[in-house]
View 1 (cartoon, rainbow, N blue to C red):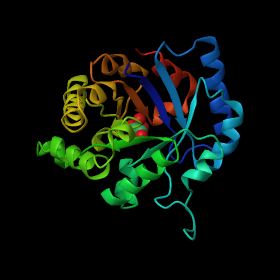
View 2 (cartoon, rainbow, N blue to C red):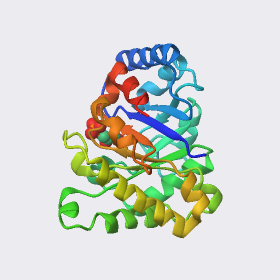
View 3 (cartoon, rainbow, N blue to C red):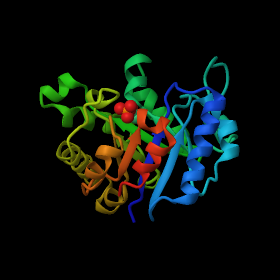
View 4 (tube, rainbow, N blue to C red):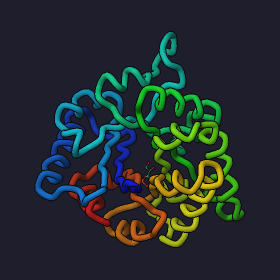
Length: 253
Ligand code: 13P
């Protein structure tokens, strides 16, 4: 059965103490009011916070994720953090290909494919981001853009490996802008993504795939967006920095 997920991407926000408090507050809220059945909760704090945050969360209630990983397994890559290092602090999922990494750090299709491979080989789950920029949406080529992102960095995977993937559709024009995609726009492209996966991997794998929406998602619009049949939850930025607000989004199914 297809899993629904709400994941918080903290980006480069909070210091360690504030991040640990945010994670513990969320844990408390989930103890009082657990996530609805079949809804998973994940948080992706900065690298520096992972070890401390892992000590205050119950992995059966909150899955610990990272925002990135190295594209190499180990060695002389100053400043990078490997999948094995992430595993050693109980990380279970890795956000890969966020549009901020593609835009600011020039991560290309081949680099992202390597990160996906290492993540899966390490037994972790990739949360693979895709999405178009405003000019591409205005030109009506969003499907073409997303198709290339998936084909070039994911579609080399075997059926078994692809089953570990979570996809997050995040239109760049909706990230941090307060402009949220309409539920219809989200549904349309999520359905398209599922159809691409069905053509490559078959109907069952496509039906089981979790596809998250990201971009200015908050408790005031989550219910409507999550009600769409191909939207299986959200990847939340700004609204994940407030435990009560994020917890409300978790309850939006
Ligand atoms: P916002 O929710 O702040 O728009 O960010 C979305 C996002 O980029 C999550 O990865």
